[in-house]
Image 1 (cartoon, rainbow, N blue to C red):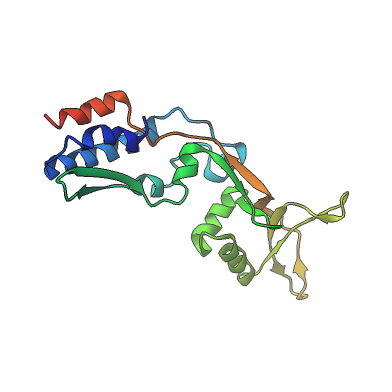
Image 2 (cartoon, rainbow, N blue to C red):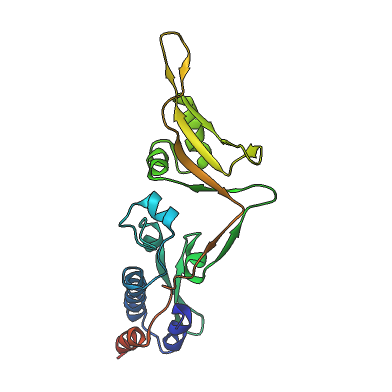
Length: 208
C-alpha cells in the first residue's frame, strides 16, 4: 500500500500529537528500511562500472534515504494528519520508474567509468564542472570521430596532456571514458515508498 494512502487509514483516529510524531518517525524508518531490504531490478552494467562491483540499487548515496521526512499538522477541527514526504528530485522516478529524455536536440550526459566519479569529487558533480576542471588542469576532453559515420561518437573522452622538452604534446596516454551521450534513459521501477500490511498494523498499535 502506498505510504500516503496507508497513513490516511489512521490519521482520522489521531487526536494526540505526541502519538502522531511517534507514528510519523516510525513510518519514515520503515520506508528507509525498504531501500536495504527490497528485491530490486539490478543495476545496469554501465552503472555498476561507474559505482563499483558491490553497488546496489538506491544505495549509491545517502541523499535519497536522508531526504525522507514527515510533518504533523493539526487542523481547525482538531484532526491530526501525518504527512510523509521527500525533497529528493529523483525520488518519484526511482520509485515508479520512467524514461528521462534529453531536451530538444541535446543529449543526456551519463558517467561512463569510476574515473568520472573521482573527477566529480574533485571538480564538482556536474559534467560542465568536470570538463572545465579537467581542461584547466591540462587534459584534452573530446568526442572521438566515428570513422564509418564521419561524425563524433556518442562518448566523451579525457586524455592527459604531457608536454615534452620539445614543447609538443604527447598524446600516447590512453584516453579515459568520461561520459556517454544518450537521447533518453529508462529507469526501472524500484518501489520503496509504501507501508506493508504488517507495518501498518504496527503503527496502528501505537494508537492503543
